[in-house]
Length: 84
Length: 375
Image 1: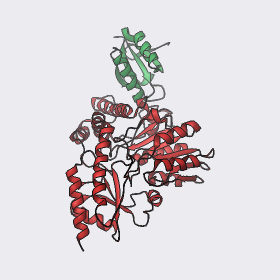
Image 2: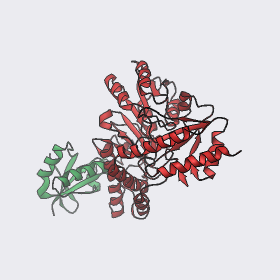
Image 3: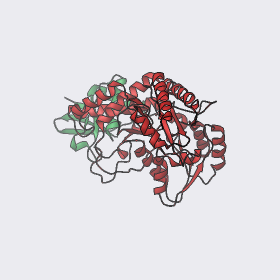
Image 4: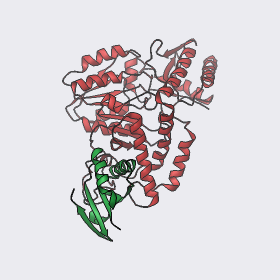
């Protein structure tokens, strides 16, 4: 199943991101970033469904919470960075 | 026991506080340190705590709410971020050692004191204006004196600091939860407060509200940017190395909910009424000198008194034996006592919370009268 991971710099940032998305009607879940996309070590990401990406980016832009990086999870263990 | 020592820590809490902390000990792990349910629940608790504090103190972003272990921890973070060797710092004459000791520990800092008599905000502001010269780099001001309950005009101080572009640190140890206080409204650089006093959380909790980044006192794990050997640049991680006191934070969440539901204004008014009742009663007992605001609205729920010819510690201990819990001595604030002229004797301090009653005040007054009749 394809989904997106919005990589956040901290847990609190991820929680705020998820809160803004949920409030805007986009189901979102905070999780620890998979090792290969975590960047500088441990980080947290917000998981959203494929169909919600553009809506999510819009909401985050309005809330001044632009994502650091976004990855599409295409299959088990395979992530592709999305150009924003 | 009748408890009048809430300026040290509130003993009576909303029942939900203890329940939440007890539940947290059994069910919450460490926020950001795992993806399992117990870690996720802990993360939600920490975030809820930040959000509620942001709502109560009008902070625009929960990331700017840092969980500390007490107000002293927050004040040390704020002071050691802004104050460097060779700087000049202006403080009020009613500061606690949590402000004056960190300042003394930084070599070559010039500390100026804006004093002024008790319960006279106009005179304080005159003195503060006079001393707020271009040489001042940082201002630290308590909102309420922990010894006398004197409410300093911190909003006016904030306005002046903002006009002159001087960063302000507010010590809200005695005001958080019982007086309105706004991060956005004051434009303060930092506001430090305990969680275990007027916010009714457990001991070992505190909050530091930050307008911008700060220098960490501790380095260590944050659950973020683990590859880097420097602390993350962003809040709150930068100031929160190591495992959180999540059981404390869980209790503090319930304390914050309680304060938000009642409103700090209502809580503060109730405490002020009790203090006025106590001040009036004490002032009618011969030999007692009461430090109270007779005319204005410049005293919060804390009041000090002393008795001619009697040692305040001995008297307070005797009252403690009779079931009245208060605190005597210098209250870790020798500067405040020097300013008020009570450094030689100290005072007995009675401090209220929303759980005190008029009946308890009457019982305390009876106990004081009884003790003073003893030979």
